[in-house]
Length: 168
Image (cartoon, rainbow, N blue to C red; front, top):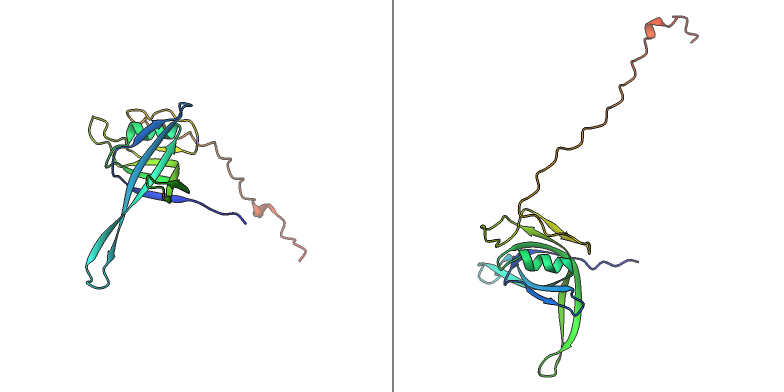
């Protein structure tokens, strides 16, 4: 039986991405994304908004794109998988942390000023493929290719030419 480890997060960055480079030169980007939902307090009936923070890690070209285009407050859609790691804190206590390892990312919302605060327009990156940085202006849409000529339907048979001597 197959298993599935898939996470989808849509939220806003709580701070600018942190970019590091491994000795091999590959980039690693870490972001914190906030998601929120509303619920009603059972005791008071008051509507409350609850916020959850998610740590997300990007690798390679995707990490470079995150570092270049995402900023604090940017809206983002991320697909990835959960990964739990064990570490020892400064007091010698073993702890566990669960992070999201990003596999795909889509920047949401529009551009915010000429300073390049964020790049929007629904550009999508991920899947371990190599991507060039998105153009500063969306490429013009090309007209769809002309449909191939459809074969003309055959004319309906002319039954008036048939003999009326049908044997049944």
